[in-house]
Length: 531
Image 1 (tube, rainbow, N blue to C red):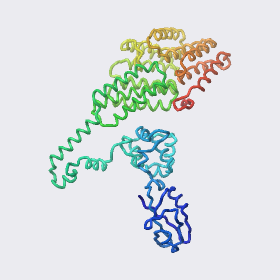
Image 2 (cartoon, helix red, strand yellow):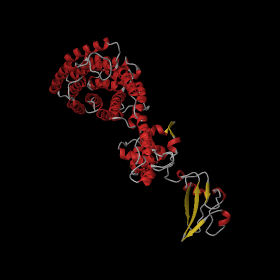
Image 3 (cartoon, rainbow, N blue to C red):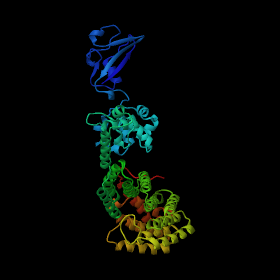
Image 4 (cartoon, rainbow, N blue to C red):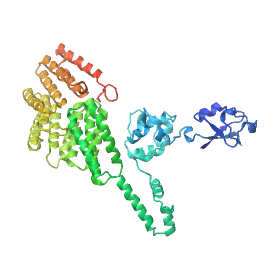
């Protein structure tokens, strides 16, 4: 219950509807003193019928004040947040707690704004400008800084554990006193007062027992960790042959579990293993989003994967994630960024590994796309030598680097440097290895066939190039005709000068446009890659 004071100037009428608007239309108000429901009277002139109307006035100078008790609580006042919202509220048909757990500040701001709190008021509560709050709510900006997340939780009265931002020092002391009470109800503070520097040993034993219980309850058991890693391994095995949209659905639940466990205190060894699992899950999510053409989200997931891999303290995983992240700018950005990421991966390689061989192959392909022919040829040689030393045996799991994956990268490299004779040989060898595999990976062979189409276009066999490109896409299941594949098919069209584009090339262009109009991302919108 909160008291609001309505200030009214003399000789000025203010009816109940005015107060309702000013107080966010509370359903039931009472006045201090007489406690009469608001709708029973109007605010009178000073000194006229005050007793009968049930108001408790106070006169100070030229201002006439009326105190009003709002039974609903502080949430009825402009700019006030009701903590109960975070327990019972929903957004888009889902409990608001789901968005709190994800630290989705954009949704949090939209949720509060929809309940009558202006962006100005939100900004004042969390220490941000109104413009910045509006930008965050519209997904123009994102909040990642821990300090800002803390301000959001505190300012909007969100339970801090719900957002995983821990307790304030004062809250920690309060919690310690609450949860360390002994049987006669005394707190740590009482012990200090009673015994000075010598605390009650029984009380300390109770605190220690409670601390042990808290640590045990917040620690992942070895078996639970094994189950998480087994599940991640299953996803890694299934990923290459699965449609990216379906994989994202499967990965979401796994990511949520690892996220929840990572927010709680874990021993260093278990936390490192959790971070390793998170790195692999985030990398798969990033790759799936890249294939769908969700470039901005893919960048963010790769960033998460990089952070998690570093936290795992596993050198080979750090190399792997950087080598995988190098694919995004190769397909949808600046290949120079690919070279930079590949160089970073190679610099982290304490010893040669399949992941370092992958990084070397990614570097060669990016240099070729940049037109650095001599550097690309040298890098191709380095990639071959690296693979001969540490390449994986044949496998269809994600993140492995067998011979067919090396040839997949070299297909792109030889295509971009214009060595079509070498490229055709590499492509045929790669396709034979993929076809011989018991697991039918679809995306890599389709991209190799699109490399073949690019070579045909370079050799001025434009009709064949267009037909091969369209066939490569058309033979994919619909869910696999993602933006990654369609963008590579569009490269075939662009490789043919406009003056040389015959009916087959025009038909390919129309086919790509039709596929894009049918393809939708997870959000149900059309794909719009970053420039």
